[in-house]
Length: 372
Length: 200
Image 1 (cartoon, rainbow over the protein chains, first blue to last red):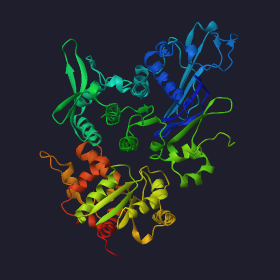
Image 2: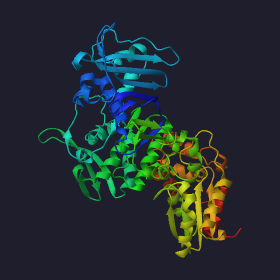
Image 3: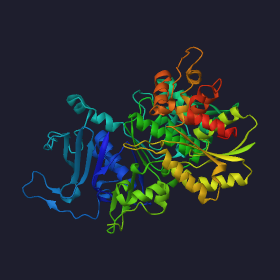
Image 4: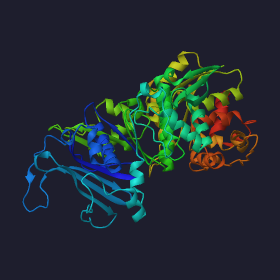
């Protein structure tokens, strides 16, 4: 489990400080406050570890677009093996059993981009020196071979992180079926939901049946839902819902149905991801379904099989959670995102006895700003 | 007979479905208007106004049903029935509703304490024609710690699927052949008595 994250100089975040994570962490805050930057930081870290630094930067059209623009930088050339720009982008993660860190910067004229330093420190031991000897600028030391050599699951864990920012318009349509084997991950936008559901069916029929049974709570008229494979031109896969005696193809399903299905498949996967990050989870869900999804999240985090990070703007959803799981993101007087846990404010205790978290949020009582 | 019920769950939540089903078993001709207030703070804040509205709509009496423990349990948390009751009474009085028209039912620790009292019902939900399962009754279920946790473990072990109160609580209630087992739970017994309009 991840215990805390600290990002430096990534997008709007100059220094997030250590953000303590709980089995469920819910990020709230105004539009543009910096919630997504934190999640994008984790996602970027995952891509660097899995696919390399260049691949991770391709999403952003270059490193210069994601490093914080407000921090001053100098080219350090004196007494160093390799000239580098100061104030690098930093990812610091505290895990249950170790601490990992990575810094990324550029050389003279920003022409060279490289992973400057990486550390993996077992819990309770002093910080080791950089362990990047013999690695290319693009490659993280965290790899399947490191997992094998040290008998850890760091790479496997990071590679399995699941990010979701669902787009139902991409979810109903047929897509080419992956036929090469290996674990199927749900795409961030949910576009391969049919294939993902089929992989669950192949892995564990009772888990598949459980998803369909749960979906019937939301759609009592739904008799069945199946991934269908077509092979007229190429082998494509799509969803088909059976309603009474009618077959409804995925592209005709409601956006809410597709969203709740994607959430259920991830939360009910027989081998769920160690970290599930869902942006604006409440989108398109009715209050009854929000209760269902919160119950599913509670079930998965209490079982200890996954850690969940959510972003939300919904006071209704917040009302279903204890205050201790909420992290508020807001900008300070200099415009920097700051991350705080309202439950840590002693002055809020009395308010919290009278008002629910969602109400406190809309009342502006969760804010730290102006309280110092 | 028309009665009102106020719950701390969400729309179509487990508490509402189970209590309304059981109330109809106890009193088949009953008409129920159920109100869900989503969580305990809302229940405490708004139950008085909701009760007033239910009585205005012709309900003979109103039952307020809640779990002693919140859905998310936190370390060191010690919920107190007396404090809950006092806060609810205050809300009722503030709304100008006579306390005699409102009856409070606090389930210790939570709804699942009622469900695990009847092993026959759980067995029926978990069994398949090819794989019958027998679950024993639990006694003094309102003294058992974390009855939902017990049910979750049971579901996982016996069926491989997680227990979800929204899906399974009502199913278990509907599989109870009679209410003899559940009637051993003091809070259910009180619920039954208030549904039937008995004075005690």
